[in-house]
Image 1 (cartoon, rainbow, N blue to C red):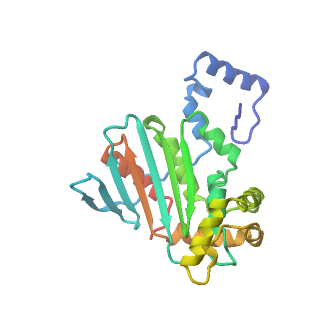
Image 2 (cartoon, rainbow, N blue to C red):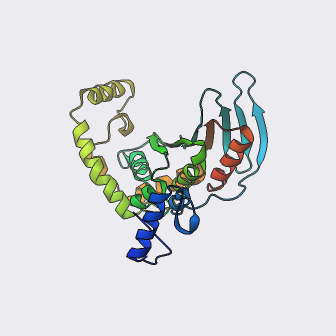
Image 3 (cartoon, rainbow, N blue to C red):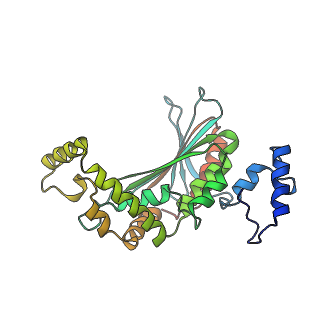
Length: 274
C-alpha cells in the first residue's frame, strides 16, 4: 500500500482503515473517494481547454478528421466501430532535421529509455506506477532518428489517467542525472549483448554498403557510444524536440470526434507553440 498525503505520514491505524474500507468495498477509498481517484493524485491535471481548433478536414474515404490547432499541433481522429471500450492516444514529435553523429550516437535511445522508464513530470518511476496501478493503461515510448513517439492505450473509463500519464511525459522539462545514470547502466548491458546478434550485424553491413562513409546513425549503439553520452547532451536534444519539433496527436478507438478533439487539445496544452 502506497499512501501519500501532502507529506504527512499517516498512522498505522489510518492505513489499516483505508485497507479495510477497500477490502469491504473495492470502490471505496479515503473520505469516500474512488480508488481511481487515489491512484491519479500523483499525476498532474492536464490544462483546461487547450489551444483552439483553427481548421477541420474530414477525409471522405477513411472518415479520419484532421484538426489544426492554434498552437501548431496537428490532430487526427478516427472512431473505430469494431473496437469496444478501448481508446489509443499517440503523440509524435518528429524533428527530422539532423542525424546522430559520433559525438551523440544513442541520444534518441537515451531520451526514449528515460521517459519510457517513467522518470517523468518530476516524479520517480515507482510514484508513477503507483498512480496508474490497476488502471489497465498500456504505454510505450519509441525512439527513431530525431523523433519520439509516445502512445497510451486504455479502456474508455481510464482515459483521464492515461492522458495525464501522456501529459506528464510531454511536460518533463529535464532528464535528471539519476534517471540518465539508471538508463545508462541498463543500456550498456543491452548494447554489449546485441554485439553478438547476427541480424544486427547484417543490418549494419547492409546500411554501411548503401550509405557512403558509414555515418554513425547507420550502425547500432555501442557501449562506447553510451559512455560518451551525458545528461546535458540528452537534455539539449529533448528540449529542442519537445519545444520545436512538428507535433501530431492521433486519437482512435471508442471515442467520438468532439470528445477526442477536446482531449487532444488538453494534451496539446502541455506543449509549447510551434
